[in-house]
Image 1 (cartoon, rainbow, N blue to C red):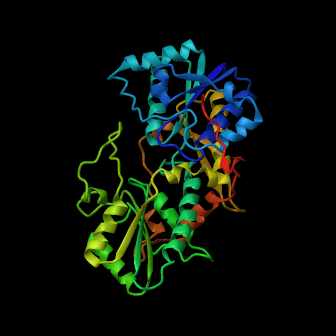
Image 2 (image 1 turned 180 degrees about the vertical axis):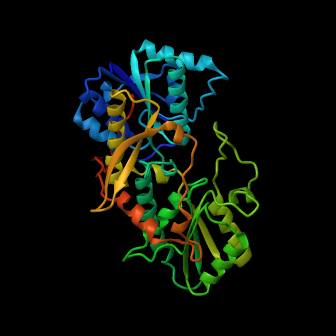
Image 3 (image 1 turned 45 degrees about the vertical axis):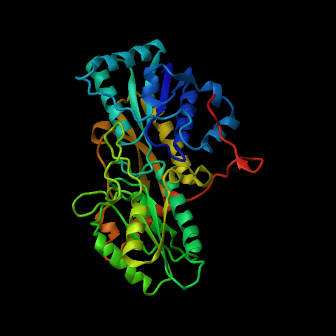
Length: 408
């Protein structure tokens, strides 16, 4: 491969930049001349918004700093490529730009919709005898890509969620027993509850854990929810509940829609969910008279590189390197997957899988991992998730604050 290009797409994670680092590192080891970055994903690429990563990563200090930098260093997008048959001109333009920069391989770091981009580009290349190869690099805090055991980004978000919940639980328990306080913590997760399930990790020898966890995979009954809070309030002065933003009522309506029916959608048609926690807190306060508060983690759970999992960072770098290695071997239309081995302590490795079996497929939590009766997660989930949050990579501080690598 003479030159390659890498881009980032969709919601950022605390470790998405480690995948860029991995792509760059392996490419340079293999003698690639230019490693380009597309600024703002495939949308920026169509405008030839392209940088040379040598300008940023040609020294060890910046390379390590990139792994400690939150959000998408290259910039992201939520741009949906049209179907090939609907707009061939877009694809012709993409390949014209690839040829102009003598690019042999394109790497796209992202989730479900980003993998659809790789699928369509590799299909077009195959149908039109193009030389370029295309590889998907997994990324999503939602952890909902199929085939792969887990997704880079999830472990760090799970670590942040469990850590901050331990702190919220301590704070909520600070104010005596005069009147119970109900704290509802809203966690991301549209259709898959992997993130909210991570609340179960907060329970340990120094923390009693959350009182209940509500996931999109489970049935949600509003009356039962309120009744369960009232029951908890009979014996507890501090109640903390984790709820996924994607929980729905029996009629299929998102809980956040109970207070706002006009919800915006993104380029992929996904509803922009927010406000589930506040909606439930208002309902509980109105029906029970209990003191309530809502906390919405929102982007905090994907931006907290200061408490990223070292396991997650290393695996994000690993999948980036594997993508380049396999592209150099001629593979295309694939996504890197992570496999795990728990036989002698946790270890992981990278492999590749056909993108057609991955794009637009959503993996949910196995129902047998959910304790429906007690609204908690079973031990199977704890065993699955706990290895993913291990280790830390200390930020590089200056004047008391973390330093980040910034694109010029």
